[in-house]
Length: 283
Ligand code: PDD
Image (cartoon, rainbow, N blue to C red):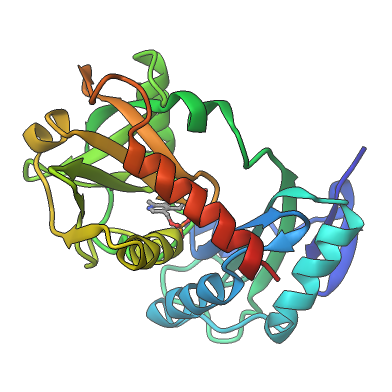
């Protein structure tokens, strides 16, 4: 059955939603996006994702689409129309359609697209067994704090991981881990949760922000600093966070088994706390 999607003010069957061949998202990857999870039919971390979207738009001097102020309502309507109990909503905004030019067009109307996906979020196989990651050079541009639709390198990294029989890649720059290909990366050593500090080197994860706050509230020790490949391989535990994975344990890094090769206690606890909090705060 076809989904209902949202395009520039209209709810449409997905096959009827069409955009211009001159859309700058298509021509120049001139667009930004967000992904919001839906649990029990409720949107998680809506305000955080909206704030980051606004920041991405500002950083790229991109205007807001017409229906921007109705985003919450549009999300809720799409969740309702597509009967999403567990899944996600993607928000995609591009600078709009204009004759091809590197210079930003003055009068283009931004394109706004929202679509849903159904997906399991709780008790997923990966949360039970953990995932295995490889290292890959971080070859992305240096404004990783902006959530743009330039996702080719992350796709290539996922393909490299798949070819190696693993699940994902952790990206490495100057011998230090920046983040996962589509998530933030953490190790645990001697009870300390270690994750790279915020800068333009990584995306400022909305899940990261909540998980670190919840960790501190649970009296766990959090240290925001970069860590090396060697430290990652020798970690007691490791995990990733993102809107789509929540807290997902990592049990192998660059062929080194982490801990006893099963999800570690801190990752498991943080996942439980995060789900509990999400069930309370979803809107
Ligand atoms: N990815 N780092 C990168 C490079 C990401 O692409 C993501 C999210 C994160 C985690 O951010 P958040 O906790 O706000 O989801 C970190 C999403 C899930 C995606 O592209 O599918």
